Length: 273
Length: 342
Image 1 (cartoon, rainbow over the protein chains, first blue to last red):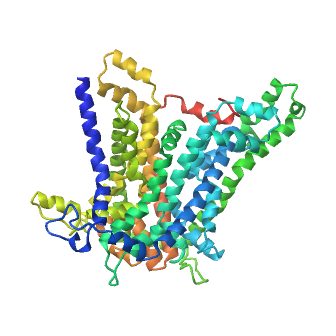
Image 2: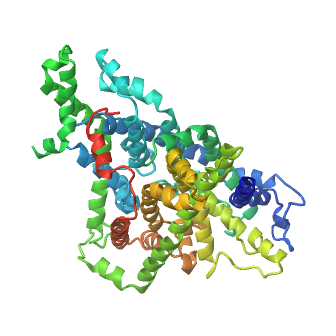
Image 3: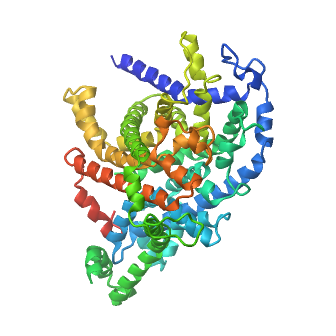
């Protein structure tokens, strides 16, 4: 009985695993196909003449590494800043108190539910008037402001930490900033990992903001990927797209795999209760 | 004064702490200590608050003003046109169709995504070997950036070279033009549900919070797996599911994925989005990029915003009596007001 149930569980697991991962499989297969066998009839499930040419083209049709550097710079600045800023604000909401705190906290939670998209057009107009289009300053500003979702995660985590931690420090004459920096922040690595993965993924995957605010030279891989792999007639080069997509996805996967242990604990311990 | 009242217990807490330690030098200045605490709170919450005012509140107001003008973003003499933009939104059959389509798309994908996420979470919460590996692998699609996911699905569902048609061919069926009407909507729905990993992770965290004693007790009492799932697990998980419902609805209403699966996600390519996938964001993009109608696009976004708010309000209303809190939510809300309680 129990054994039979376990069997069912494993079968379901393997089935979902296949279902969830098969798109990656097709992506890989396509990337190694010669363009001529892409449209073979009947379909070639396996490349008959595996080639690395697609990867070569993916890297050279446009300055892949240049755009990757743009994306990396942007996502790096953004994720580090937003993680620090969110931890900073989260500490305030978890451990300190001041007039109006409840209102401010409620306000913050409700912005989690406000569609950010609505600020898209005015933000573009404002940044363009301020001469910030084609710079990474908007991402610095967005990063410094923190994100409600991440602030909430940090707040949940900090709220659950024992009071004794800060009491000893206060007796030793530590200020709040030092308590935050020296005691609370180093303890919160699972949330930091979660926050870094999430914000890096947001920025690395974001299409709209760079499409709006950055021109063709300054834009990110996400934008270039979507439009760059075409031949001189404007037709999409599918095998190259496959290779490019793999190269584009890899950094987020690697970051996730490195930090994933912390990621799961972070989400679990700061739980959305 | 009113703000001070609202801070209530929080503001008084330092005094209590000071009373407990009369020898502390700070006890002699409870007032200044309170001020310092409040100051410290604003030092920490201040950056977010400033960013919120500058990057959300102000643009929101600006967007509202824009929606009453014929602004094109360039010419300085944008004129106030009253409700003309809104009148156009509500009389343009194409826009209304997009709105309806967006609503339908949300109504289909959100429950599907949450159900898929819950199913996977329950599955991955079983005592199985190599659980971590399974969790990581099944979560992977959620890490793929939207553009990467869209390109991947374009390869799968390509008419001539995609594996979807290859599979149909194996079974002797004719290939379909998946990326065009009327099938394009199924590709979009599949793509959206495929990314259910984030929902799954949150459900999984919720499942792990359910006390094992409760489930053990139910088993001792002879409850079947299904009984304890529907009577214990689901009710205890309902706040988490509710949170996901709200955030997923909001995110899905703003979805612009169809733009990325379209042949060429550029201003020109907006026109290439198959009609069955023309969600409201596509109209916003078309008006904004191709026609330069900033005022009208802003009005569209405000209508979407109102739509989102109305739906969220409705969900909140309907959730009463369905969402079950193990701890009285009133109590959890007062908790953060006291400093450093543990």
